[in-house]
Image 1 (cartoon, rainbow, N blue to C red):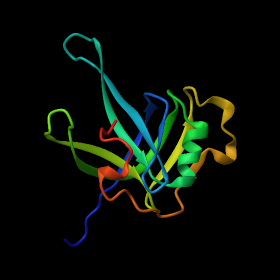
Image 2 (cartoon, rainbow, N blue to C red):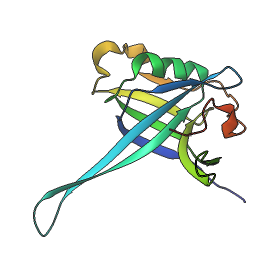
Image 3 (cartoon, helix red, strand yellow):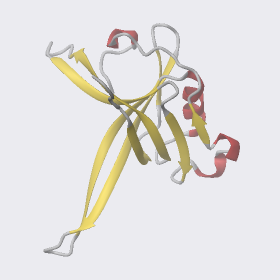
Image 4 (cartoon, helix red, strand yellow):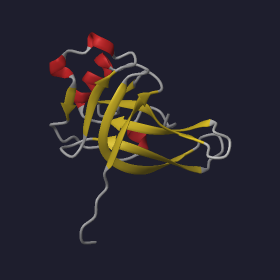
Length: 152
């Protein structure tokens, strides 16, 4: 296919503290749950409405995983640029195939920027307030590379 693009840009708040796991190859991976919301006024009732979408963010860059672990907490506002990836896994209880869609932060075309607010607060030094991945690392070849079988 000539010319394609897989790019996701999100600004939102973390719904939980980051989860740091070790892959079978010994490298760390960070998993984030990011909420994005939109609000509007219902034209008929004048009532304020809000809709929240939840996104799974997976960070493979080792240096960025360390920054995530050290500085990000539930409620922190972040900006992410990454790629959509859908992976297949098998539910151990039912034996059925399941699918998870995630935003992958890895390589030169991805970034994570801490915007402050929430619980991130003033504990983030200015020089660390933005971190773009600089090293390309290989993603897990299959879900078996992670130490658990359930995506989140």
